[in-house]
Figure 1 (cartoon, one colour):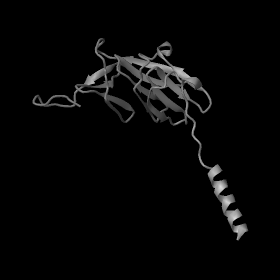
Figure 2 (cartoon, helix red, strand yellow; figure 1 turned 120 degrees about the vertical axis):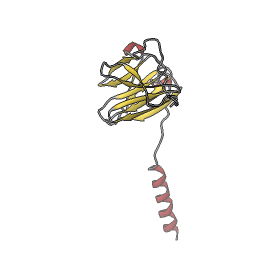
Figure 3 (cartoon, one colour; figure 1 turned 90 degrees about the vertical axis):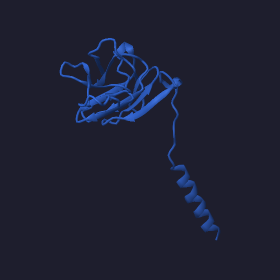
Figure 4 (cartoon, helix red, strand yellow; figure 1 turned 180 degrees about the vertical axis):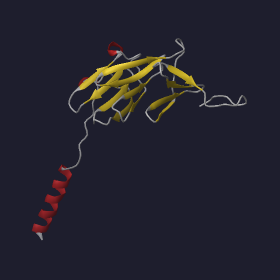
Length: 161
């Protein structure tokens, strides 16, 4: 009987020690800010963290921080979308938006220079990213500028996302 209890205690201790452990990262570990909007993983296995002080790529040991110094339009990155072609699209309230590929920031301006894109909803149509806000939607045109797109062909309807 005692052997049975010792065996049960051993299995409980073994299973408990094999449980997953979690690590909390903060500014002390290399994040630019503790204010995080979104965390996602790309097709290469990298973890991307959108913060109010930059965009972070985590490879499991090191943090690489992308900011305006690397070409982002703003440090306040709200959302990220990994694409199947390896691009990581970043979303912010800005007059330009783009993606990161091979640790290089590619930034594209709005065709209407002083108009902020301000996306609320975003998603892919094939390989194209559509940015939709409250009153307008944008798509990257052949000149690599964000251009407002109109989904409604009737004058009686407004183009509200």
